[in-house]
Image 1 (cartoon, rainbow, N blue to C red):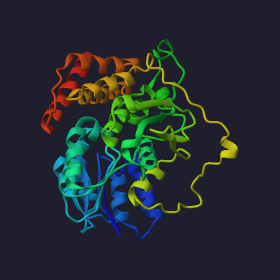
Image 2 (image 1 turned 180 degrees about the vertical axis):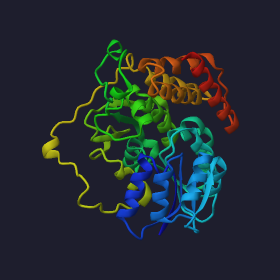
Image 3 (image 1 turned 90 degrees about the horizontal axis):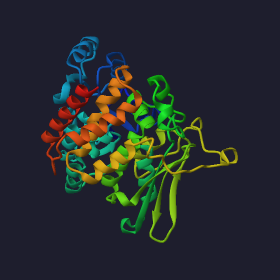
Amino acid sequence: MKRLAILGSTGSIGTQTLEIVREYPGEFKIHSLAAARNVSLLEKQVREFRPRYAVLWDEKAAEELKTALSDITETKVLSGMEGLLEIASHPDYDVLLSAVVGMIGIRPTIAAIQAGKDIALANKETLVCAGHIIIPLAAEKGIKLLPVDSEHSAIFQSLNGEPAERLARIWLTCSGGPFRGKKRAELEKVTAEDALKHPNWSMGKKITIDSATMVNKGLEVMEARWLFGVDYDQISVLIHPQSIVHSMVEYADGAVIAQLGLPDMRLPIQYALFYPDRRPAEESRPRADFYTIRQLDFSEPDTETFRALPLAIEAGRSGGILPTIYNAANEEAVAAFLQGRTGFLAITDLIEGAMKALKNIPDPGVEQILEAEKEAREWVERHI
């Protein structure tokens, strides 16, 4: 039985992970659950799975949860970063699933690696901002870093059993989001409601907006660079509107290996949880029927309209603190867009402005990363 600690248990990835736990009774034990502030859903999860720890980032929400769970003595309720670090470094579990949104995932992931835990990683910011810390530490501790994003899982699966030095190129696919094919002038007045209508995937609001701006793909390019030890010249982004080919790997001899399937995040989550095994899924799970799919389309991304993608590659190539500035500026700008305080196109403009205005720092430590996040957020807030 594998013991799981889940950071972000009330979000999209977290809830789908718990679906898998239900689907395979006796395979998993939930050691701990952590969320931001969703008291009611976390209470339901605790009552069902009876974890040893439950953590809410918001201290007031944690007090509410503690009161709501006063009849359950086996679960200890914690709060904030102290709570996340306590469960991440705890000796009595096997795998940390990091599915929180934002940079709060960095320190718990480092703590879990230092404790010798395998990581199922769905938190992009961990590698985008701290890949230069995480990857050497994971190698030193000999832990498995298992990607949960559908694209990175596809690359991981396509690389399985092949010599890494024969990898020539990664083809990182994306649907193109709700605004695929549109030009900048057509995006001037789009609303949050428009941007949240993703054609293929059901995700949280922030990630859905990131897909619409192509920030999400830019973050994934930076993440792929660290996960698979490739140069940016070896990563090509490919628009694939059907979201059937989740990514591809091209080898030195010209052979291309891809992982295909219907858009369903349970597949990469399950692969990470059971790795290296593949377990049969329930018959009710949708399967790809290529008699009905018939056609797969591919095209080059429009980097003039969706400038967030080349800006991400610029940040990644420059390295240092610049990926943190890119990410934090985006988080603040997306929050403002969802609140109706700024426009859709302004998200990318604000990212670019912060990247130009703030000083880069080579090889930053965790505290410098967190300070740069604060500075980038403050810069964006001043310029909205």
